[in-house]
Image 1 (spheres, rainbow, N blue to C red):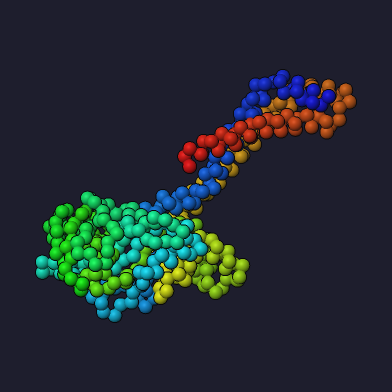
Image 2 (image 1 turned 180 degrees about the vertical axis):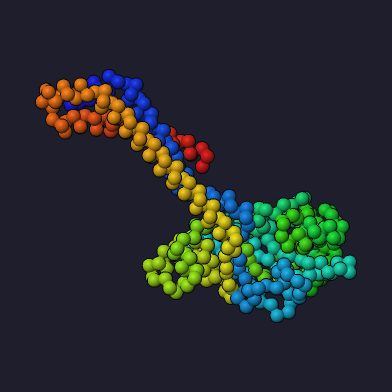
Length: 381
C-alpha cells in the first residue's frame, strides 16, 4: 500500500516534484564540479604560478652570500666555494622528485671584450640531463623562468666543454650600453683559449640578467677555467601552502617529534623539499625564496577558501529550497494527511511517505547533478 501511495503521489504533482529534482540537480552539479576542481587545484595553480620563477635556491655552504652572483665586480677564481655540476641529477632523486619542475645552475664572472669588462652568466637554457628513470629530460631557464622574454632565438644546447663557438643572449641593458645587436659576433678570451660568441637574442627579464652576457654553462666554465663548477642552482618545485607544522619546522626542525617529522617530510612543503635537496647536494645550503613561495601559498589558500565558501553557500541554498518546497507540499496536502489519519495511518507511516518522496527527488537530482558537474569540469581539466 505504501508503494502504491508513493507512486500515485509522485505522478500526481509532477511539476512540484520536477522543481525539487531540479533544485537538487543544480546544487549537486555545482558542488561536484567544485569538488572535482579542488582535488588538484593546488597543483594546477602552483604550475600557473611558476611564472614567478624558481622558489628554491641552492648555494655553497661556505659562501651563502655569493658576492659575485649579480653583485659587484669580483674574481670568481679567488676564495670562492662552488657546487659540483656532477651532482645536479641528484635534484631529481629526492622523495618529491616528481614535484621538481626544473632547475638551472648559475656561474658568473667577467671577461674582456674590446678593452671593456663584460659581466658573464653561465646557465642552462634547455639542457638535456641524464636523470634516472626519465628519458629525454630537459631543464633550464626556458622551463623555470617563463618571465624571461627573448627577442630573437634561445641559444642552442647542449654545448661541449671544449667548444670554440657558441650562441648567447645579450641582456637588454648591456645591449643599450654596448650597441651590440642580434647577429653580432664577439671574440672572447678565456682560461681555455679563445671563444667566438654569436648573439642569438636580446634578453628582457626585469632582473640583473639584463646587464649580462648570458651563455651556456659549459662556455662560461671554459672561459673562467672552472670545469664542472657552479655557484648556485635555482630550482622550481610544486609545493603546498605553508601551515602551522611547516612554520614550526622552519623555526626549529629539532622541535618536531617523530610523527610530526614524518608528516612534514612526506608533505610537499617548500621547506621540506629544500631540506631534502640539502641532503642530496653535498656541501650545500638550500633556502626557499620566500617571496615566491609565500605568494604561491597565499593565492592557493584564498582560492581553496573561495571554493569552500561557494560550496557551503550552494548546500545552504539547496537545503532552504527543498525545505520551502516540502513545507508548501505539506500545507497543500493537509486534507490528505487528515484523511490518512482518519483511516488509521500512523504518524511514522505518514512521515515515511514524505521522507521517501524527498529521498527519491534527492537521489534523482543528486546523481544527475554529480554526473553533470563532473562532466562540466572534465573538459577544462
